[in-house]
Amino acid sequence: MKNLNLKEVDSPDFLNKEFNEPVFTQLAVDEYNAKADGSSFSKRDFYNDPSDFVSTFNQYACIADMYIACHYWDSEAPFIFTREDAKAKDWNIKIVADISCDIDCAVASTLRPSTIADPLYGYNPTTESEDDFMKEGVIGVMAVDNLPCELPLDASIDFGEMFLEHVLEPLTGNDPDDIIGRASETLNGELTEHFAYLDDYVNGTNVQ
Image (cartoon, rainbow, N blue to C red; front, top):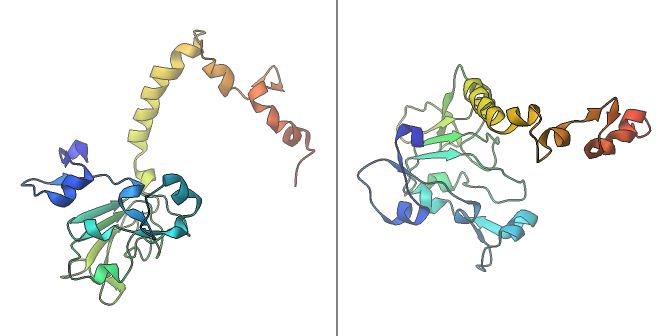
């Protein structure tokens, strides 16, 4: 988003201020979920038992034009938005890019995965079914389940930069943090201390 020169704002400003330029906000889990009984939000409680929480995402859905879903979702957690939510008169989101691509659950408009060759389809909130995404009132959906596979160049560049910054010098012998030692599974034909837990597997004594 930043590479597109879009301005990032915090969620309160996104909800309460008007802008004359495109803006985006990144939501933390406590910004679109709340305790069902109205008590204070605890991230630990949410992770331990998300069934006690409800989604508050609709406050953003009536303002945002586009939603990029990059969540981790648990089956006990509330849906981020439901089919009924998308029918609301004040619903404003026109495009959903579901990077997480959880089918027919957390993000109601994600009915199926799409493909790189054919990345877009439409979700009709009225019929709760797939439709032409160019139609009025239909939400455009991008839900390519293997989307990260389309980023090998970026991944290779990032890996190379991290390798040069953190690994290359330790490989030459200057390794005060024992990076190479801690990452090495074997030494002289034996498991190293950090990987000794694999002894049973190697010896065939704990194979199901």
